[in-house]
Length: 173
Image (cartoon, rainbow, N blue to C red):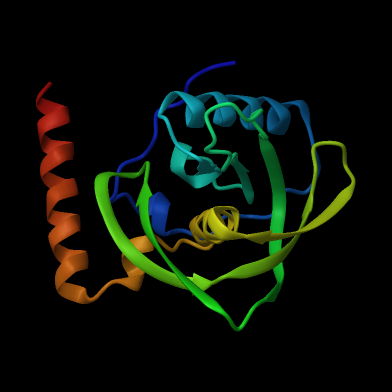
């Protein structure tokens, strides 16, 4: 497994819709393993393939936050929301591609998602709470959408300017 560099906003790849995964190959399995390692190392609870520069409809997540609970790493290939509750929830979201920036985003409180697993089988699950927020956030990445796209223009511009400054500072070393 290899840690992969995480793209920082603004980057055109983060605004590009990812392509469906046609078949589960060793390359896709390796990408999923690398993404899980990268996500845990960051640390984060979700990571989409476009965030590591791969425009595939693949995401990984593990929203287990309890200290003593076993991790639950998930790999979702070609995920799609098949149902969303009318109930809404607001969560302060962050993003590994927009480090140290957080904002409240309102989303459906529960969603049902169908996806292909690394086993080649179709899976479906209903997510709620942090899991629902996370899976929706990551699917947004696959559609070229960031959590800051839900914010008012002034706040979004302010965060984008901070990210541009961070990228310049990192480039200087």
